[in-house]
Length: 189
Image 1 (cartoon, rainbow, N blue to C red):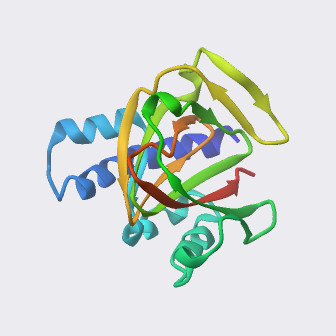
Image 2 (tube, rainbow, N blue to C red):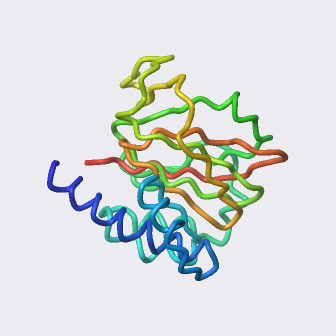
């Protein structure tokens, strides 16, 4: 598993830089690129998803699911793709304030959080840097909650996604108005 995470780190550095350029409107702002690499969050448009399929064997199938023509019509709740190895959670609700969104982290799953409508301002902090455990890790639910403040906040608009690995604590569903999104859960192993 160590080798896989070293490869992931290399990809994060390369992709983070590429995603910064895409999101900055093809800017070559070196500070923005360095910030994206340091922050470790991957955010991009679904149109650019092919850049990320090599990061995990199930990413290609996950992104294909997000391209479904009927994705926005799917009912809220869980949708099976590949059993417990790959599934989708659809939500459609009112966003919350930053102080109402605790950092969460998973161990068994990678999240690809795709925003279909609205803007989800997602908080991020390295899981290893989280010090205030509000709810200890629950292996049944694959989640832990932290009382730490996010290190960064990133606005993820409709048509865009964020990828969170177990090393990424994240605070989703922050914003004004409704946020309609699909969260793909991809088993790490």
